[in-house]
Image (cartoon, rainbow, N blue to C red; front, side, top):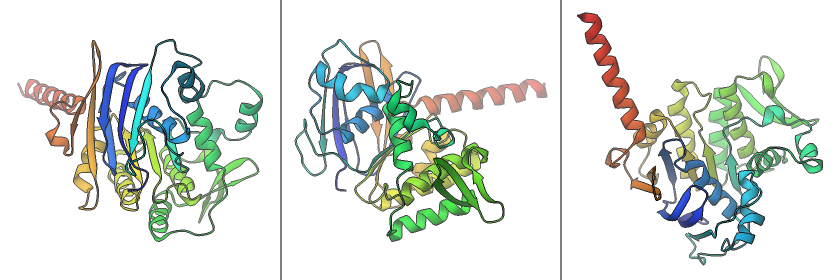
Length: 313
């Protein structure tokens, strides 16, 4: 896939003490791990790399270009970030990826009115990923919809029961039976899918783009998780590289169960050790040597069995 991120090397940046390296697939990359293991940090590093045409090889450049994506002001270490793309570009500098999208955990469309204007005039406590996703959602719709995008748009529309529009500094969902509803009145899980619909309708998730999504399962009913996974796999089939950070065992396993032969998939189990972050990597979830999600699921199963046996006695 054009523009796909193939490798990153991070040295002494935030939770990544020492040197950390990872090789990514051009399809779906699923990041799992405990709290503080660096999942969101890794995705923000990669997203910042996509958004800035620069090298990240000094404290000054890190402070100038990287830290706004973390809501931080400065660092004092001597960090570096090197990366490579599938087109063979150099590992320290590249062209911007015009359609890189980062979806944060928190809903932003419900808080759109006046947000960007306030951000331009005042210092507010939101990192650049929040500003970016809202700015991209407010872009106008594309005139031409590709067949792959049309299919995904129809799928999402069927789930949320309508389409998302932006007018008068406010987002709405147009429902067939209920008419125009403010985005904030929609169920939180549908709002997440509605944001994905709007970004796709604005032409930001076409072939050659990269999607970063932090905890897509947040506020999503478990019965919709396999549907969401199928939508992301369909986007990947259309040429979108995807990075997902998740705490959900269901999300991790449904990717493996729903993938087709034309879907590339790779898992990264991030673990925090005394001397830094390490990653267990496998193309099949069941092949991961370690998995905090599997361990938690096994612990729950054992507790259920133990409790059931106790009640029987």
